Image (cartoon, rainbow, N blue to C red; front, side, top):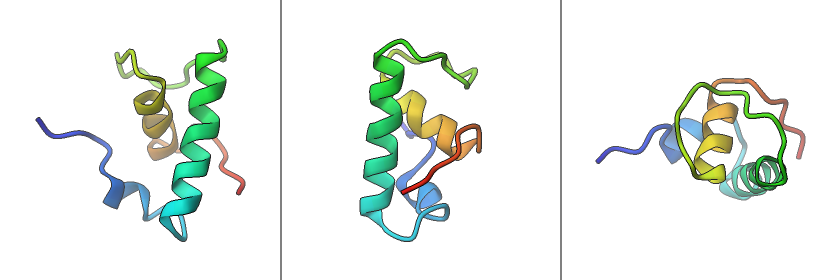
Length: 63
């Protein structure tokens, strides 16, 4: 099973892994709290949904 987006793909958006983790976790918490999901990916995991939103450029990331 290949997981998309990959960490390598997401690191093209961020300067380092720590910013990636912080941004993804923050957005995943928002999704888990009931925020509207901005991606069409059918997934139950808030972390995967957050990673897809970031990869698709649907959320503005400020670290």
